[in-house]
Image (cartoon, rainbow, N blue to C red):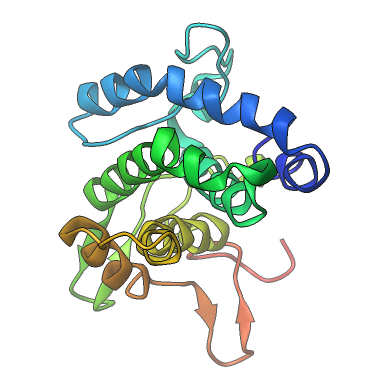
Length: 199
């Protein structure tokens, strides 16, 4: 929903989109509790959820591995705020926007791992949007959207005239250090690390 539907709703029906973000705020404590059970910080939103905010996906693999949804939520919220949030962007940013974005930033900094070999940060053991893959390391989509989730809080703080916090500054620096599975020889972005052409 956050990537496929909310961008359009944010543009043409911003008050309807607001409901989705208020739901994310209302269930933030569930997302933070889940991250804590996994030894991580911040908000680890579920792949599928209902009223409670807890995971409801019937498929354990997607429930546990399709974590790009956490960054999807950040991107959707950033887009909504940048679109003006129905003329209430400033109030929404201070009301719940920054809180959600920062909690997502904390999650990703605790989920990233530094690879000495790649001299970059990596995100391993995930399910990309292509669910047929099931699990992989360094999904191009996941890594790219995590970069946006990490750079967004500092950019929005500046946009709204706020001081960038030390955490937000760190996330912005990390956002440009995430490894991407680029096939250097053919100059093609691979779906994920180890992807074989033609599969």
